[in-house]
Length: 101
Image 1 (cartoon, rainbow, N blue to C red):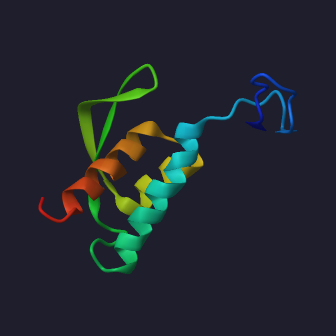
Image 2 (image 1 turned 180 degrees about the vertical axis):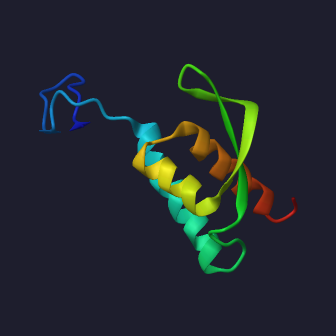
C-alpha cells in the first residue's frame, strides 16, 4: 500500500488502501538486482552454493540448521515467497564478495 499519511494536513493520495505495505520485502528487489549484477559480471554464477539457515525466531532467520542451495533457487525463493532466510543468505554471500573481504 502506498499511502500519504496526514501529518497536520489532509490525506493526499492512496493506493490499495487497507493492504499493509512491507518495505523490507520491497528491498528484496535491490538484493536480487545486486546478485544478478554479480552474475552478469562473472563474480558468481547461478549454480553457486549459498548457506541458507532454515531455523526461525518468528519471521527472523536464526543462524542454525544450514543447508546448501544454489543461487538460482535462493533468488527464486526470496522473490516468490518473500523468504527472509534466503534474503539473509544473499546478503551474507554478497558481503563476502565485497572488496577487502
